[in-house]
Image (tube, rainbow, N blue to C red):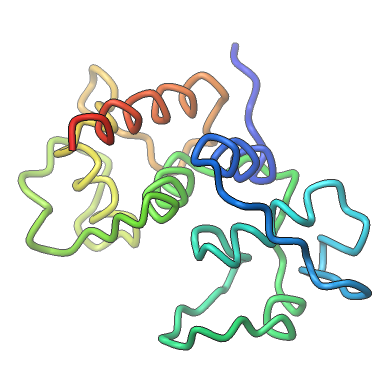
Length: 165
């Protein structure tokens, strides 16, 4: 069985793979309720905030370009929790600055991906672009925790997709 990857590790690998400039977290403050000053990934997680690809839970997207650290500090990031396959996929796409819309959905090949799920457009877009393939039983298993091998497979497919652009 493959080991699960944590949300912090996932953000770390994306930050390094895409060669994002590390954005140091503000001094003398916590980033999230569960990511306090001194956390080993605090600067990596701040980089995700600054680059708008990973946020804490209950994050509400706005059009504002100003980062509201007070808002983030009142939320949980759950840095040691393994994200689901759908969460990981959304984080990867946002890091690529790929924002799928309804025109890019196509036909749904997955029996476990409902059209009213929050992740529907991310899964359909990724399937169309070859970033994900799903399982042989026509499922994607969006709520399953992602393991390291699945994450690396998604990243490999992302790199192939980016190279073919």
